[in-house]
Length: 207
Image 1 (cartoon, rainbow, N blue to C red):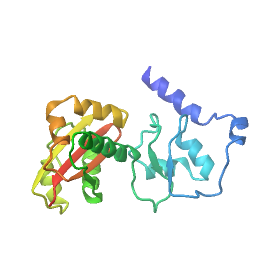
Image 2: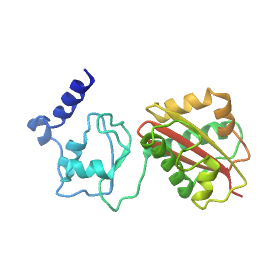
Image 3: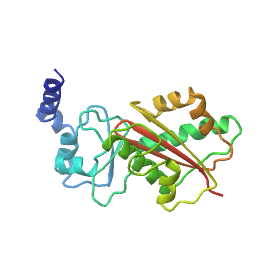
Image 4: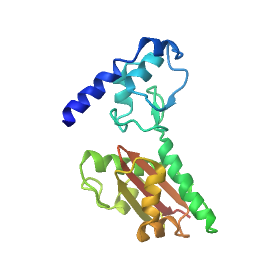
């Protein structure tokens, strides 16, 4: 039954009504490097709109599940575009809202730590595990150091299966250990990673 449903979903990507397409502005090439997913989008339709092969879009965005594209996620349209995830940014915003509501300093979303968190999320999906200890990178503390990041203290939150930033933050805030990391006053820096339903928060005290 699942295989049949998948086949039907894929077929629907190619059966977008011509009349509906005529109402959507098309471009000879992407006018910008990123695109925010809207309701009903597919790689095929986005590729048609911006004159990019849908298979190239899938290659540029391996973290996006083509059968479960999330509204609000940001995808790359060009090779030159840097990895960027609206979901990762939104998680940081929600973290800092929780902190400032309790009189704590907001955390800096640093690019190098964000990269490590994204790699950890990818690793959990690609290596099929759910654990703080990676079979490829070791502990989160080892992993952070292996990417050349120095810190005085560190912590990690992970989650899997939540579909929105709000959902994963609710899960973390309703768990004592995860909430303590989010509201720990000694941390000043955060890196958030999201990849196909896997979520990672890395916290460090950098100064």
